Image (cartoon, rainbow, N blue to C red):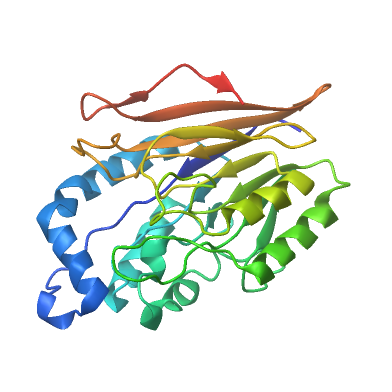
Length: 293
């Protein structure tokens, strides 16, 4: 296999549509709207997102992973612009998507994500639902959904037993194949915050220790993150990324994306990790030297 380049971005948090009004909202959405108006609209900027995506596309990746939170409070009129934006990132056969908690913000519109992006969240068999499997050369891209509606002031995620069982069966089927397995999920597998964590992370980690993947990609925390999960087969790198639209957030890094160059050698798989994004200015640069995962 030649080198396969996989790009990863997350949490674009596209702007709320014009004329969104507090009087049309209730409960959790009202809190989310107030949060957007007070500070988040100053942090999540469309011009920053567009510049980042243009730089990503200039790298000519073979595939792009987007790990959720395209919208903010899951209003009906947020989803069509989100679809238009995702199409500008790339066609469905070149972009793999999983939902974030903001994409399933309230129960009444939790279904709209699947209705809006069916071709971006289905596997090669075109079957709906999670997990899905996409094969790109010797890369197996697996998407799962941790996005569930939650109570106000909570941003937890959950896979659930049926999805975990389906994921385990999928990984068992792949076990004998010479493929590099990439798992896409919105929530990190390890979190210090109880109100933002993946509630069945322990069960997912145990599953991956039985049936490992080669790389896990996530968003949600809006920070650079690389941790490793020990398994009997070796450590699995779990890599997060800041919001793709963030600037001037004094608590978290500015917008960035990950680039992975995956190749197969005589001694197994090799994966080089680069990070490009904004640092002290509004110019995109490599944020650190490449490293091998």
